[in-house]
Image 1 (cartoon, rainbow, N blue to C red):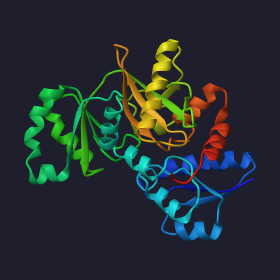
Image 2: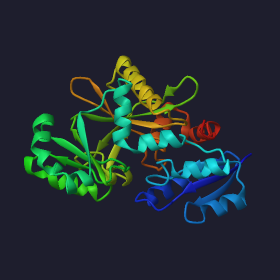
Image 3: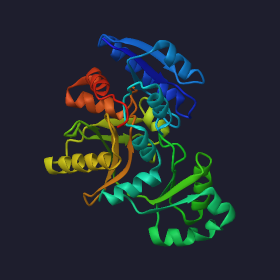
Length: 313
């Protein structure tokens, strides 16, 4: 039995989701026989961790502060092993512009796109390039904050005059924005267990109900999205999804059980959108669904995450 601090909550826009993930993890750890220490990651985090002296930290934080290497750095300083990816991998995965460059270097397929910071628009006239971007990438486009999770701040641009507004919307969430060619297709997720020989859990498809895409409401509102293991994918396609997902996780040097989000287009090609180093553990999340389909269950996934916990190397 270990003393496990479950880090949850925090101050990001995904606080409520994190609290739900943390509660589910706490219940699983208790069933597994561990001594659970619930910890809200607030201004007293370091003080609480020093007082409680856990053997390991289970990170159930989502968004900034939790997935971007910040809390990982704190745990490194305190020499507390933790679940999920290390500092550098967390930073890379959180920044979609950086991760996209690393995916390209590793020959992982990604949509074409361009990235801008606020300064480029306010001081360098980058807004004047928007017609050229539309000409090169075509419509529709996907505009997203570079460093944000849970689909917050994402817009789909289908009309020529909507790109500027979509960029302004994304900049309300981050000062760097990514504009990508929107790839129509099926939204899939593959969770990868990063052992010495990484292996993939079953492919899960997210089918939003009444939503244009897998947005925040579809992700976390019961009944707004159907999660299923697609039965119409042959073995070769499933194996390709697993191989691409493992390559994406390796490109960022992830640890633990990251989740890779992909699009499968009408021609049968895969496109990686991002890697989530701390996947949601809520009742409507993709990783728990993959564990259910695999027949290993939620508790086994939590146990595996704990077994893979480490300090950065």
